[in-house]
Amino acid sequence: GQNIDQPTEMTATEGAIVQINCTYQTSGFNGLFWYQQHAGEAPTFLSYNVLDGLEEKGRFSSFLSRSKGYSYLLLKELQMKDSASYLCAAMDSNYQLIWGAGTKLIIKP
Amino acid sequence: DTAVSQTPKYLVTQMGNDKSIKCEQNLGHDTMYWYKQDSKKFLKIMFSYNNKELIINETVPNRFSPKSPDKAHLNLHINSLELGDSAVYFCASSQRLEDTQYFGPGTRLTVL
Image (cartoon, rainbow over all chains, first blue to last red; front, side, top):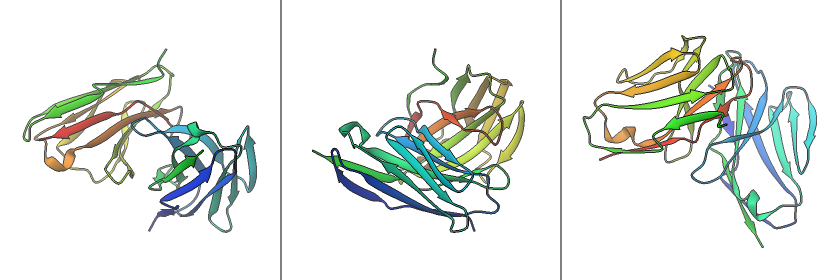
């Protein structure tokens, strides 16, 4: 079956760095997406990886290893506004997104 | 200049009623989706439309029916509402099926 695993919750300190891991199993693979979702709001797109390696976008970076079925989202210089859920989603061979349950990130001052 | 919009934002109704949720996108995208997000926060795809043709129809009850008058709109009609239908429903759109999806603000449906 198709499956996405990511930690349920993580806590980090303002100004620090945090890495949110995601492992996936899909029927075929057409890329890995990360979305941010603040409580009561819509998911917003953060990053997309389809090739192995690191994609950097400001304070956020995303890494993919296709051979390991593994991705991570790296958040640097954490700010209080980064408190949110981070959703990992893998696109299968039918271009359907398979979603994880999300990682709730709590930032402490 | 909202990209993907939904109405209403909140919907409270009684069991057995019929209701609709509207979605519009002004991004010129060819594909639109409906997702259900339950209390455990899983996003579950319900339907997607590409150029007005249904291309994914997950195992949702046939009480749910998507209606697309044109490629900028995808409405969700729900018949005979049940308690288990209570959730947040998100509309989304993408240029093509394989492209990044952009979400509307969500409709929180509560069935009493």
